[in-house]
Amino acid sequence: MFAGFTVPTQRALIMAAAVLVPPLLGMSLSVWQRWWLAVVLVLLVQPLSPLQAGFWLSFFAVAVLLMAVSTSSSQGVGGRLKRIFIAQLAIFIGLFPVLLVFTGNISLVSPLVNMLAIPYISFIVLPAMVLLMPLIALGITDIPILLTDSMLALFWNGLVWTSQVLSQSGTFGTIEDKIAASVTFEAEYLLLAGVGIVLMLLPKVSPFRPVGGLLCLPLLFGGDVLSREAYKVWVLDVGQGLSVLVRTANHALMFDTAASYPGGSVASSFIIPSANRLGVHSLDWLVVSHGDNDHSGGFTDIVRAFKPNDIFFGSRQWRNKQKDVPGRVRACGDIPDWQVDGVTFRFIQPDKVGAGNENNKSCVLVIENKECRLVLPGDAEAVVEKKIVREHELTTDRYTWLVAGHHGSKTSSSNEWLDGVQPGLVIFSSGYKNRYGHPAKQVLQRLEMRSLPWLDTGLHGAVVLSAEGGGCEATALRQVKWRYWLADSIRQ
Image (cartoon, rainbow, N blue to C red; front, side, top):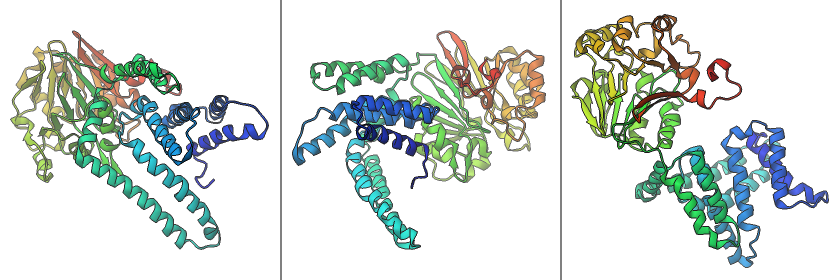
């Protein structure tokens, strides 16, 4: 009631009732029957809860605890401490794949932190808050607020201190990053890891525990490995903005960083976790096409998280505002073509655009191997597009994919540009029902005249472009993993 009956609170209440009420009613149910009873009750009350990570984490954690401590017979203070340690170690092992699936990260020190944090919250903070409630009912609020704020501040500062100490030591963070970077999320590997963890946790089957450990190895070492000359691109769904992640066999590039807002950046809340889950924990190159917020807003967060070796920019005005930027920082127009892992990168924006606006200062990047070619034009408008077509003789080439300039604005994706690039697929990075009306009707009409297919991140989710195995494939994630509430047109 104090927590406002939020969804996690309801789930916890139902789980506690399923465990405690049956014995009071004289019902003889095993702990596992009560666990299943809690699952059924939660699904009845919260039918959409399986779509949340909290549902799986809660029930997996309780199941792991039941497996780990239900058969323990340790007595005395030493025995109880041993049970606490075993319980935390079991939860760490049992939730290992679940946490990786939902967060893409793990914490190697979580068992030790939990051994202190859980008792502190359970036996000090929460009882104190309950005891202080009568004072609030009497209108005395200063003392309860001061005490609860102090206790929570102590708890939070302890977590921050732990995080800072570990990050400064570097050892744990490096190991965690390597583990997270090597993880694959294929269903068969997750199933094997699940079976392996059950074998590791079951009591009195110690001969099988090494087998369980072996079954977990594919989860850590069966990841998505790109061969030479292959590359993979994620046009991320960042709302009304742009951020594109590119991976080759051994390198990573990010083109633009999406927007930032007073409450934080899209980079910190979405791009960085997404890139980590895709196995990217550092960048070789970061391209900031131009200075508009929807393309450069997350720059500081991306630099702090990924520490790129080289930073390329299109707008000198934007560059002059940046201070203490690590790595080499150079203008896109000064960068010669380069090739890594059999994949070629080259900037093709004009040397001189004239007194144009910020959009026309955009870096325009081409990524290609022998079979597939991608064009990333930032927010470049028709005047820049025409110059590129003339200066680079694009009509002699055909491009596989084109990320539409300026999110599909009518001032970009001109007839000359589309005829020059001749894309096989056009991708719009725009916000769902955005106020600008992107992609514009005029642009869609130009595509329709040329029978060009298109995808929009606002409608279809992130778009994955795969240039490997001699083929060029494009996949919209919402078409692959659709939900029942999506429109039929999106599913198809």
